[in-house]
Length: 312
Image (spheres, rainbow, N blue to C red):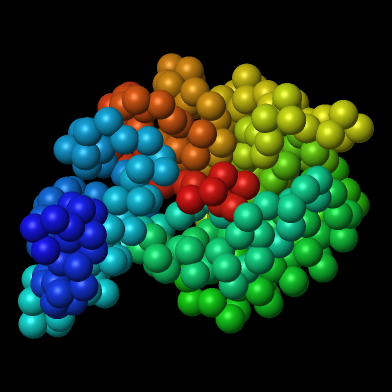
């Protein structure tokens, strides 16, 4: 045996290591990560992100945050109820920026609802506000919203967010259906794909009706980087320059700006309105989330992943 190569001895040793010993080592490592994560999670409200939370996690981007949550899910699966997790609620995350079905211009990983929900469960996402990729190009948004509601109905994690296009005739009926029949808490609009601006009278009317109904209006600044868009269907970023003037006239309005690459540019304008919220889907880079959160009052930044366009 003394003349055996080191690699052979290592392989023999692995065969004789009790499997429970390997599992025990894995549990110890996960237990340490779980402990740190639970301490940090106490500072994080369900879908409103806390600057202290991200500061304590160090230099992390959007994907790092989700994968840290996945560690907690793995730990919960390995530890017995009588162990570390006894009496401790699991990590709970609300993702406010999700879309179902297929992106019109190419297939995406996780663009099937079942696969996306499985991924959410692995990451500890217990609620996802889901719009529909079909709303980008379809004109019959009533049918789009109906399909979305049916898809969400089979998954407790999914909360449907209806699509409204105020440039189409009869959009008020679509809005009424979202509120009365589907009991939605939010709607999502796509001005850059639907051919209108935030300066149009129809948008102002939509904002008033939504405010009276208590609806949150989500405005994705961009769904896709313009550099990768189909040349026949190019959609520039939504121009937000006139939105502040609109909000002065509609104090009840509640708006969430999605997919803005640099929301800190809005700090001196839209951030002044208490009814305007932001997501962090396109905020990335070293210390990106922490810098972003420090720039806004507490409770104004909500977690959003832009899944499955951006892979969580």
